[in-house]
Length: 254
Length: 353
Image (spheres, rainbow over the protein chains, first blue to last red):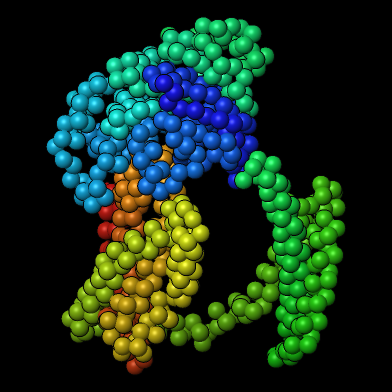
């Protein structure tokens, strides 16, 4: 069943940058789709158009069969609730505990007054502990978020997105600021969520070895256009040079 | 909006920006020329070279200067070699343009400094005249032998001053919070209406801030009568305006990441502010506020001079009576309190970070 349908999407920023030039693709439920491409090729913009942190300039996006290209207000917040997102820089609230950070994933479900008084129901707290258990750091629940290592912070961010019970999980270069060993372990949690909960994952990645290990399908962007769509095994040296330029050489990460 | 429309709009915007920059450059150049003519003619020629005591003034002559300047400025800026062309990035990359920039810039700086020297009437002779030095000696001698008889009275007055500053700072906090959120661009750029609110609060607080607390104290002492209440209100309104600027700048410079992350969970605006904005600004806010209390104690003494109550009012009374020994005691007490406040506020701010 098709979860997401992106059709001829263009994005032009107010600065004049033409970041996406007519991107079209579809994503089936349960896929682990990886998007590759150089920095500045439009990968991040694409993800932000899907969960509508940005509004596409033209074209349309359908999510769960509904046109979400220009939804606003309450409808937009409803949409964002259904799509989890994990960022390169983790984007946690540094001064708050890990638990509160995870609970922020449930803000969309809470009343405004209840959430501003930080009166979290026991049910949500239990759920947050469960999410932390899924990413294997439940013992850190009461530590300040900025006291954790990079890999641990990214796992907290994953737990936060789990609180949304997302139909779709977006990850914007989730391991780009982590060391190789940690990268692999963080990617394993995405795989776990994909397999265990059947959550569809769209992930921007740089390292082809990680792409081959985790992706069920790959899309390559270059200068805002899709230049490759297919299986990760099929990306050979020629494709690699087309995507990353003649000078590029593949770096292994295990 | 279709794609080609969007590209057309961008192209038009670029053209419009360049035209705007050209107009601004021409106006700025005209101003520079006008300024040079006025300074050279009025200050350097009339007052310094001709040593005129009173200078004549006529709108006709000034208007003529302005017209000439406008003409010269526009023509000059159109050649692409003027000062403003360079400031706005419109200058041609020629040697002449570079040379004009350096020579005219240096010329403007020098006439400004010379005019400043003439206008301030700087005179080394006055500073060290016998008469002057003797008077200074008298005052310093009195200041350094303070009369302790008024110590109790001065103590109460200075406590009043500290409380005026404290109350003004405390009351300012909640109001400043609200105003600063409404005047932070990154929180108010949702649509035209919120931007209008932003512009409104920016305008009001810029206006209030540009009027010194001393003037506010005069206004309030007329409004509600001389005394500590007037002084407190003067400090309060100025504190709100200045801290709202500092607070909103702190809000504008926070990390975007957490805001993006929290709004990506489907949280509403208030929830985003509570979870992604406030944790990032709480420390700078505290630090500004404590520092402002320290500033307010100093300002409260000055405000007392115009009827804002506290130690300042007492100081101006004794100064009016030329009772320099009493003034000496008050000055020493003010210095002591300001020094202690400064020390405490620095310590607290260091402890916070």
